[in-house]
Length: 471
Ligand code: PFF
Image 1: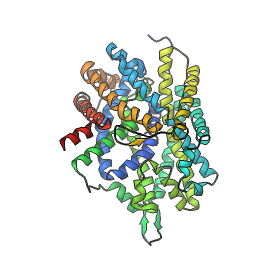
Image 2: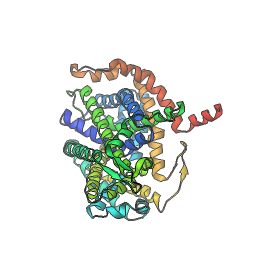
Image 3: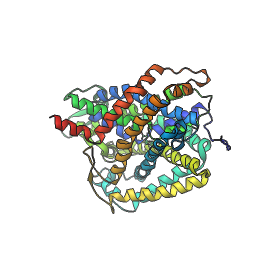
Image 4: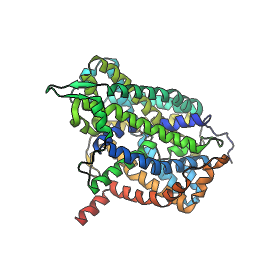
């Protein structure tokens, strides 16, 4: 069928590192800790792990097995599985196509903070209004965005084995060392504030890990559940065609079962470590109120924490943002690679030309989203009730609207049309054991589809509307 030899990862390690590189991103380091702090610490962590081993596992298996079995990206893979389902490929392709309009922008913000700590600007960066001043300016965020997008494009340009795999293999171990180092440092912190109250890192750790059931009603529990589910999808990079693309690069002799367990483990380990690093540090210097910062945690609360640490804060701040930049880069690479790879298959073009064209298109689109904080500023109330700007609108469409729908239809296709056996064969190829097969079958046919409908109704505001009718 294929005339050209398809690119592939050199083996299991290369695949795991690249896939973990995609999965480990700003979602793990910034979003997971603030959700854990908001949603009752250990309660959130427990629910997240249960969902990971059931829902996360099911979707990761589905995406990777589809990719390897069809040898294609999402745009063509679904049509190969069943001609009538080609349209699902188009919707799946839309998710990375939307995410890439803003992910590079966030990457640019991270690069800016690396520069802040290199040039000893940690003090000013801790002042109120610094971050807002930066993102609402017109030139500076665009320059940083260009730097980040250019590095991403260069890695994609060099291809699967030399570019993506080589970069991930070099970077992921460094990332792990950095995060463990900062987490350990965070636990040793202790600070006495102006009122004479001393708080320690270990107390912060207790807040992070010990389940807090205060105010846990049924509807609150549902909220935590949905937060954890949304986070899980985003974090594992599933239901967006990325793992299908990476799956299509895996050689047939690799044991997918083992690789998938490693990816799940690595992604969750980094998320847990990120919480261990951020929550105690914020708690020590800003108390429990500091942790309610939400999305502004990474760029507003943390610089204040680094500043309060004194001289050592500048070094820790630099290490922190370098680590986040690595995480964001490997994720951004996976998004751009998915677009490039699908377009190469679609138009029969070569990698170099396709990467250049995609890079140029997305630099233009990212600049527009970037200007959404200045020239094109507007605010809208999204269907889930939150208020956002252009970036939040893109994020809402891809993550809250499209992802549950894609997960739902992918599971219907696998569970009811081609049947789970189709996936099982791929997981058992080469005589390997598909460990959680029975669980997989029940999940893909019944549980995931039902919960995706609920998740979709929640994120589109339908659930809240039904609740208001009942009350
Ligand atoms: N999974 C990555 C994270 O947790 O940040 C981010 C990500 C990568 C999101 C790729 C979306 C994506 F398409």
